[in-house]
Image (cartoon, rainbow, N blue to C red; front, side, top):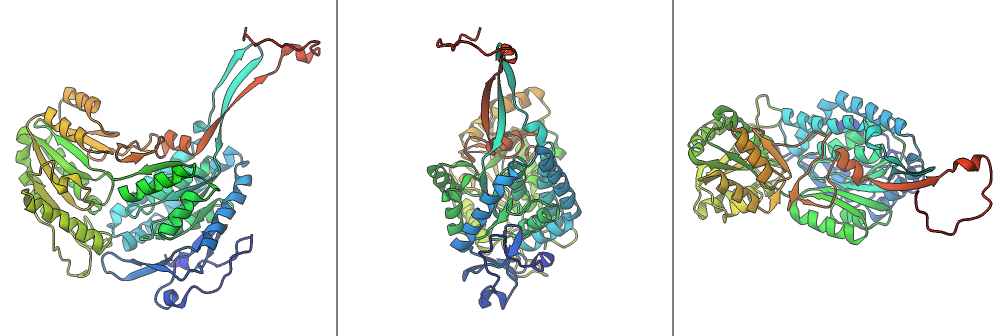
Length: 528
């Protein structure tokens, strides 16, 4: 973060933002995160700031401005002006920028990961994974030429119909806290590679990685105004979902915010894709590979402190496979809960005291409603980080469908165990859940796996894979209550979201090269 905050402060070329000091209240304690407008890091003129705290120590890492209406307008103006030139840039030039950007990200992976550790709380290995999964999207966009190929058909003598994909214009991305690098990289590289310009709002809880990415975009020569970063909360979201210059909005986050953003954006005539909450299930059949299933479940349930939309939050044990639950508990006890920079740490703190309190309340509700709390991670203390938002791995057994711990997304290192008598019962349970991000099955039976992938109602299916997030040559295809919109994130679907088809029919007659037609035709063409 220190390199970023020492970046020059300069005026955008349109010259309407001043460079006067940020409010004394913010600057007297900690440096403030800047805006990135028209290729420059600009100090905000706001009087309202949001503290970003290290989840392990509660120390203020930086302060994030709530962008003023003037600053938001400047960012949109910059993006609109830049679009006119960027859309005319050749696809080969945009491809080259993606190649340069992926190289820059790879060279700055540890710097990005350290920012994530300090602001979000992930352990270093998981933070590197956060960056890597976003980097893969950038690498995939280096193949943008293939994605933009159109179709052509000679529909009649001397008449061709063909399609081209064109960018929409200015698009916006609204990001969550749990993947500070990956989710921005799901959004703006796809938008830029397809010829759009982008207004990006990182989470106000951990904006550092996005700001480093903006710096890298500047370093590789992405033109001024093509990527702009604004900060804030409700007012910023309201601007991005309503401003006439914004043609499309991408969002990843919780149900309440996602539904609000989707409804507001679509009411203002914008395209919108919104990834919402999840309750991902793994069905464990008795014939599964015991060691593989146990280790996979532990990693998927407790990694990243359970703060990911594809976390494995429910394990459905069919028949005798429930006998494996005690072993899951014993292995989960051995996971190291610690600060993210500590060697050997398996999971770090939760993002905030409020998130910790909510998770602990849902754990208590499970006890109150009759479930068995076989591993209680509440009250976990780390000597070096006494103020950290730590929740140890927690396992709830004998959960029922009606319980709050099953119905709600806990978003913490909590595994809810449900028992089923048969695969039929397990599928009925999974399919009755309102969410549809992902579901997995653990089995050695090809027939059982094939039936599961056919009958389960989830957008992403894992067979002996606990977190079936597709690589970016595919697309993230959550469904049901986990997604609002028509077109999913990244891959071919992402390219479709950020582009619009234009269909051209042209008629160049052979005889026109030799003579001018003497008489116009007034009859309906027969395409003969």
